[in-house]
Image 1 (tube, rainbow, N blue to C red):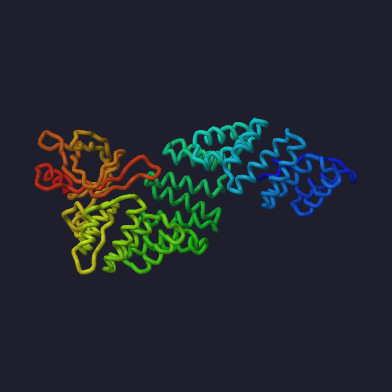
Image 2 (tube, rainbow, N blue to C red):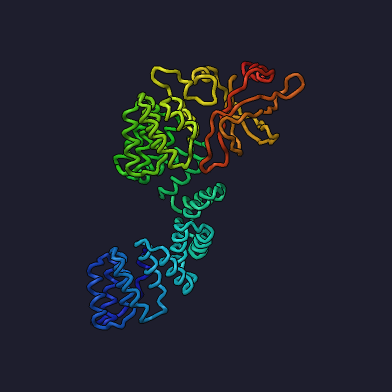
Length: 474
């Protein structure tokens, strides 16, 4: 809480209560809170009915983290002078720090009502309503704060955060860019802008923002973890490993960093280190579904199928998902079949190479192994297409890359894995458009971006499939 919000303007010399309070104010501005506390208490001892002295004492207790005492002092100040709106701000801030959000909201609204042009009151009100997920109220409060103080980069940041959660990407970008224009050294703004870019799969641009956050705040673990996340998505495992290790050194209690390390080790087929990192993440946050699925995948790699099943079941419980067929297989001790069904239910699309068994076993809905599918050269082709479902529903989409065996699409419609569709292309063959029959085998849900990523595998046995393969082979 900024001292300007509660320090009264008093300029009196001598040994009177007002003079002692003036000395306390001078000490506060000089950063000597302990001396200010003594002067303030001396002023109160001389004149217990001096409301400003109790107000200043409340502010001092807030600055020292003594919130219960700050509340008592502010209540005393208001009993002597009910018009001291600053006392309501101290009460709101103190209740907020104690976790008493309903009480904090009540006091903050009283402060704003008494002084409707005080930007700090709106800023605090915005933080409190945001905490309660009252996003419309928070938006109004932060906007009001900016009306009375356009230089509040934190208000722009908070608005961007709200718009991001509401998936209003353009408005979020506008607010975060305004925050960075006011203060380019605000690491959290750089991170939020990076998140927005990452949601658009603009990996290089997102990486640049996260690196800038590291530059301005080199000891910020979250910034290093974000760098690691981008590198991991780009498949740069060595770089991702280094970034996540730095994050863990800076903050060993950062569950997301341990989770990232687990993903890297799993990608490198290092099951035991992966399990250790996933367990560390879950020790810090037991609600991380990816921690349990990661342990399940790693133990499956090791051939510890029963232990893997237990991990998948934990993940299913957290997501409130049930696989009747998977449970049936598990009860029959058909562990591999149960793992397949559990992974299906959890929508896990990453393939696992099992020890001494066929990799295709764990690729539900796909009739070819990973090597068979990826053995065909891919081409980066950006082409507008339409996705037609069995119900004759059409969805616009755009290809990101294509091969003779499939396509990677970007679309605004979610299609479950296993859905069979027709991809209507603008390509002409024999005086008609090529229509590609395919099945969804991969689904990536959007973060901040508005598009889904769909991986589709061609269905064999139709003329259109041959025409598509002929086009891609040209």
